[in-house]
Amino acid sequence: MTGHPMTLAELLAHGDAALDGGLASELESRGHDLTGTLWSARLLAEDPEAIRDVHTAYFLAGASVGISASYQASRAGFERHGLGADEADRMLALSVSLVREARAVAAGRGSHHPMLVAASVGPYGATLHDGSEYRGRYGVSHGLLVDFHRERLEVLVHARPDFLAIETIPDLDEARAVVEALKGFAAAAWMSFSCADDATTCAGQPIEDAAALVADAGLAAIGINCTKPEHVLGLVGRIRAAQPGLPVVVYPNAGRVWDGEASVWLGDGTDLLPRTAVRSWFDAGASLVGGCCGLGPDAVADIVAVATSA
Image 1 (cartoon, one colour):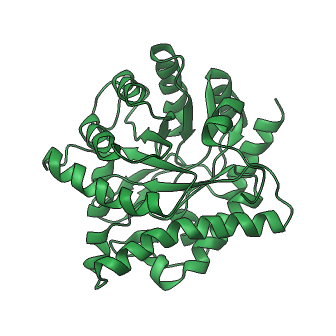
Image 2: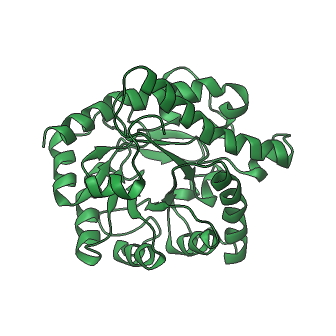
Image 3: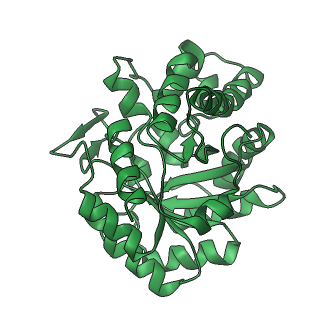
């Protein structure tokens, strides 16, 4: 492995490290047009170097994890845009390769901290492009969700990431489907949830129930992501109280609200997470802290500064 070799379990045990930040929002800030249902996955076909450059920027900022551009990518989504199944699968695998390439570039520029490659496994709702990943309860069958996730998992695991980042899961219904889909795959994984407040998932279930599901499934960690920063401390506290042995990762968004119809973030947010808040999350038991939508390389560098000042 380029960069200091470390497994996900070792990184979680070490603690006080940074994840990367938002991919799509950083691409947009660099002038890339992400309109359309594929969102950032569109650039896998049109401009993969742009995605690699963003991953590189996060590693250079000190991120110990780079998460691939497969969040909203699926065979069905690519097929709707004229790609065959084989080409769609190639795009999924490419998303992982781009993070690996970025790690090599960062190492060549002097970054020798741990740099792990995570394959993003986004929720079913993300492929609908209507904001339903922040609501859940899609009204589809358990079997459909299992099949949807298993199809992508097969491709992503074959691409050999260091682990799977199952993220922005809005409810326990989908979480159970993902756990079932994971059976038979020998891959480390965390599962992170989008949350409505400091106690519940976006679908309204207690975060303690989500933590119990993740622990029972034997996953490496539970996460909170694309959630307002002010909710993080309460969520971490509840998880640690309910499952004290389960590692926690957090990567909130910039504090805005997603408008699924208009495909824009609304409201006031922040470009940097408050250092006192980041420190409080680490102190409460979070092993890894990063950023999601609206938080870029500067925010990650700021998290690294907090993590290394302990």
